[in-house]
Structure formats: C-alpha cells, structure tokens
Amino acid sequence: MAYAVVQHLGSACLFSGGSSLAEGRLRVRRAAVSCVKTEEQKKVKLGSSDLEVTKLGIGAWSWGDTSYWNNFEWDDRKLKAAKGAFDKSIDCGITFFDTAEVYGSRASFGAISSETLLGRFIKERKQKNPDVEVAVATKFAALPWRLGRQSVLSALKDSLSRLELSSVELYQLHWPGIWGNEGYIDGLGDAVEQGLVKAVGVSNYSEKRLRQAYEQLKKRGIPLASNQVNYSLIYRAPEENGVKAACDELGITLIAYSPIAQGVLTGKYTPENPPTGPRGRIYTPEFLTKLQPLIKRIKEMGESYSKTPTQVVLNWLICQDNVVPIPGAKNAEQAEEFGGALGWSLTKEEADELRALALEIKPVIGFPVEKL
Ligand SMILES: NC(=O)c1ccc[n+]([C@@H]2O[C@H](COP(=O)([O-])OP(=O)(O)OC[C@H]3O[C@@H](n4cnc5c(N)ncnc54)[C@H](OP(=O)(O)O)[C@@H]3O)[C@@H](O)[C@H]2O)c1
Image (cartoon, rainbow, N blue to C red):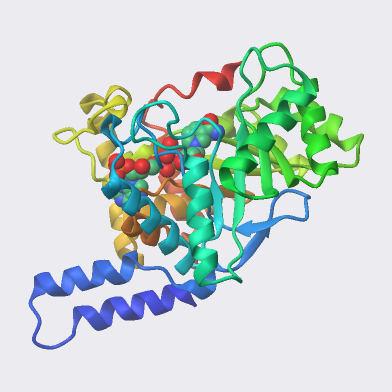
C-alpha cells in the first residue's frame, strides 16, 4: 500500500546513520510530499458518464492569470513553473486538468489564456510521450449577452481552438445564466451528440438547478456527470444546502474547487503572514487567528501518517465519497504534494473530528454566482 511505502521511506530517512536531525526532517518531508504513482493511477467514473478521471484533478485557473493570482503579473518564470506543475502531475499519474475560457488573460501584454497554456503543455508532452492520456475539463461562461444553445457550441469551438484539440473530456457551464438555463443545457446535449465532448457538467449550481439540468439531459439520454462547487473543510456549504446529497442521490460527481481554501488550509498562511493580493481580503489575520486550532490538529494528524496538512485536507474531501478535488498547482512541488494525498485514508473518526473542529469557524463568503 502506498501509505506503507511512504511511511517506510519516512522512517528510513529519519534513522539513516550520520545525518543531522535537520537533514532527517527534510528527507521525511520529501518522502511525505512525494507521490506514489501506482495508487494515483486508479480512476473513478464521473457520474454515470463513461468518462473516467483520476481521483484528484489539477486546477489551472492561475496559469496565465493576472487578475486574481500571480500578483497581477505573468512572466517566463511563472510559465516555466506552470509547465513544471503540468509535467509533475502527469509523472505522478494525475491526468485530469480543469480550465475555463475565462481563466488567464488575453488582453494584457505578455499574458496568455489558461486554455492556450494547457493545450501547449499537452502538445509538448505528447511529442515526448505520444501515449499519454490527458482528460481536459473546460467551462462555458454564461455571460448575460450569450443566449441559447448555439452560444454554447460556438464558445466550445473557440475553447477547442485555443486548446488545439478536436474534443474535450468534460464541458461545464461555469455558473447559472441570469436569464435561464434551458438553452445552455440544450447546448451541452448538442455538444455531446456532435462528438465535441465526452461528458457534460455544471458548476455553481444549487440543488434546484442541478435537478432541473439533470432531468432535461435525461430526456435526451445524456447523464449530467458533475457539479463543480466550492467545497473544503472550511467551506462546507454543499453539505448544508442539499447539493452534496442531491449529487449522491442522482449519481453526479461533486468536483470540489478551492479545496485547500486557496492555500490557507496548507498552514503556510498565519495571522502574522497572511496572503497578499485579493486573497488577503478574504483570509484576514482575524480569520487566520480563528483557524489556528484546526490547522494545529490537521498538522498533528498528518504527522501520524507522515503526511502534510495539504495532503490531509485533500484526503478529507476524498473521504466524503463521490468527491473529486481539483487543487490549483502553480509549480511542480505543489503538484507533487497533491499526489501524496492519494493512496491512504483518514479514519472516519478522524474525518469527523476535523469537521467538528471546523464547525467552530464561521466560513468566509463564497463565490456570489452560487446564489444566482
Ligand atoms: N467553477 C468555479 O467557479 C471555480 C472557482 C474557483 C476555482 N475553480 C477551479 O478550482 C481550482 C482550484 O481552486 P483555487 O485555485 O481557487 O484554490 P485552491 O486549489 O484551494 O488553492 C490553490 C492555491 O493554493 C496554493 N498552493 C497550492 N498548492 C500548495 C501547496 N502544496 N502548499 C502550499 N500552498 C499551495 C497556491 O497559491 P500560493 O502558492 O500563491 O499560495 C495555489 O494557487 C482552480 O484552479 C479552478 O480550476 C473553479
């Protein structure tokens, strides 16, 4: 079992003769962080579709982005790091990538869209390794001036052109339309029938909208594969608003975005060292102060498995069943750490204890489109 291998590596490093305690600790962390490929390669079906994806995917929102991430700047160093994240994910057996037509930048100088980058990374990797199989998920932006099923097909074709692919594995409606969703759902069905996508999903859909989308597609014999929503140990709205229960009942996979609370659940941000940029407005020193008892317990639990806090909180999501987390990786180290979230499991008691501790903390405000 992967966990045993990692633990073994951990203890071997700890007790190797002649090295200092600091070196030993560093090697234990390397062993904990690294991924064990065989376990990660196991895949899960996305809802009742035929599409199989890795149990954890990689979010590509930050790739090329200059509006929320990257201190509003994109350069060659960040590009190399993003490519490192892609390649390391594949090396670890993680082959599911989530992007969107609105991720990354198109207008500003030197910036580039996330879809373009992902397409480029796939192409370069395939030149070296033609057999590599990558599952791409992208999303349609339900902008108020986009009406009807045709707008979905035309946006999808633009995405395919940026990705330089003839089809994608998963196409999702990024958020509900303000004028209604029937046309968009018809467009998803058309995309499946035209062979442009293998499976379709929604994102930021409430329980009511989810059930409507499911029924509408069912009439055409097309399963609604997934609902991508904000879900983490400290943002458990899907458990409280009926979305998780409806996903489980209807056989729709819940894809969890911001699963490590935009880096905050890794433990690296503290009241003295809060995140900079837009994240700093959400995860304030006051919030981070209230978070510390939970982070402390996550760390302790991780230590007993030779796992990092990041791996513990991702494992917690996987323990909820029918959940595929898609943490965002900016570089190879972050991607490799995600790989180590797989192949072992918290006990039910431990998962429940973390939820109980998290209940003490008032959640931050989510993405407003969830309320549309
Ligand atoms: N459908 C939607 O509306 C929606 C909304 C949001 C996100 N998403 C999707 O979900 C994906 C993930 O969500 P997210 O990017 O918002 O948040 P996230 O995955 O919770 O956090 C990602 C951030 O955490 C930090 N981080 C990552 N790995 C780390 C590690 N091992 N150790 C320490 N810090 C680490 C990085 O930022 P720093 O290094 O700068 O701290 C990274 O950018 C996105 O990429 C996107 O694909 C979808």
